[in-house]
Amino acid sequence: MEGMKLRVSPPVFRGRLHDARTATVLGRWLGPAFVVCFATGLISHFMQHPPGWLANDIPSRPAWGYRLTQGLHVASGIAAIPLLLAKLWTVYPRLFQWPPFTSVKHVLERLSVAVLVAGAVFELATGLLNAAQWYPWPFSFVPVHYAVAWVVVGALVLHIAVKAPEIRAHWTRRSPGTLALPAQDGPDRRSLLAAVGAAVGAVTLTTVGQSFTPLKDFLLFAPRHPDEGPQGLPVNRTAAAAGVGRIADEEYRLVVAGPRPYTVTLDELRALPQHEVELPIACVEGWSKSARWTGVRVVDLLERAGAPTRARVRVVSLQLRGGYRVSEMGHEHAGDPLTLLALRLNGEELDPDHGYPARLIAPNRPGVLQTKWVGRLEVLA
Image (cartoon, rainbow, N blue to C red; front, side):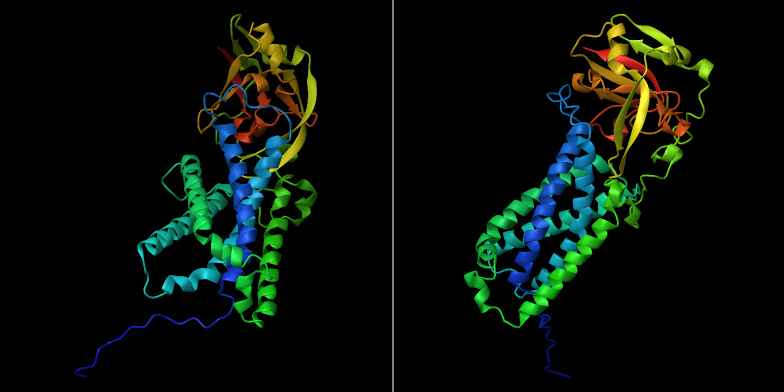
């Protein structure tokens, strides 16, 4: 019809609980989850890729340290998923506010929120897929995940600073800002928060048993069960996947390169003094389990090679394919009496998938650095 103009109006949200009080309460839960996840992620990153000034001083004790921090990292990340979804549901009507920008400050605020939301969704989604060892992207997970974590934390700090007055006004039920909210929303808000809390509890209970083994019977969604695998212990890379296969006893040689280099056969390794320790395997994907390991202390092998007291050590695998073929240990791990070149697991000869004929096992160390199929130890200055 002539003279008529098409007028598009922004959507109107009349649902309850899309308010500052609900968003603030959910933020009080989501914030600590992000802080724990970020802090433990930093620990994991620095233990796997220590900067030069830290490379020789990564602590080897407590022996269960990495098991605890990485278990918390994955558990807090999984728990943050329903919290983030609930938070986004609460605030999403603001995406449709009109006009979209009212000032330069408002533009910057919305841009920071966009970065925060995009980064948080990226971190939680890629972290969850990493726990399942599925990588449907072309980039390297570790450096990108680490870099985006800093972006998220920066955006979060900025968001809290900008929203501080509003957060303070709605922090508790007695805060002045909450008095203007409809009283009838209280029961609905409590029901929503109870449902979100139940969701967090459910996803935690059904996944955390991969690391906190007393709850392993409740595992439903974790990609690894701590009891499933050769000799009752999970593996991430099999001997076949690493291109190793079964190494014949008579062909195996361990080379120890140092001031007094030497080579030993498998029979000679077995004839050396054997020590048994109980240590966990703790993988970056979040699963972990303790086991009994028997073998030769690495510090004894290094002393025979004339290694200095504070020497670092490079451990080289016989594997042909895959990452982490080579790892390095600082003097804290190399000199720890719990660090073994293990030959047996839970009283049995190592299965090929666990690194037969010899593998590294050390306290407070990521599983990817517990090198399997060890063929060479190199003393570093």
